[in-house]
Image (cartoon, rainbow, N blue to C red):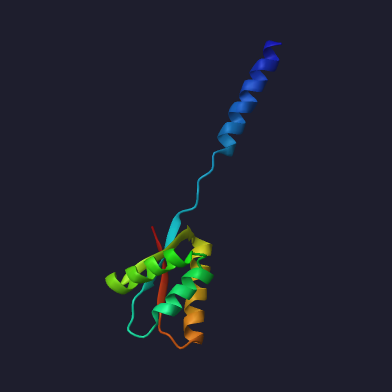
Length: 105
């Protein structure tokens, strides 16, 4: 019986050690202000690409407009780069020079 308990404790200890995971680093997606991209387009991108509510999108857009940049969201690397790339592609399709980048937090 003692052998079974020792084995059980070791197994549980090993499982606990094996299941400890490290989370990937977060990246923030930053929108930068320019003199050509419309406020309406920035709000639309924030709603569609970043799934922000209208109120949140307007707040972020105002931050971009007033301070020169704003955080659209914080994601893992792949998601951040994908959303930043999609934002720039949509902006170029509409003829806007909007700058959007993913940076480590």
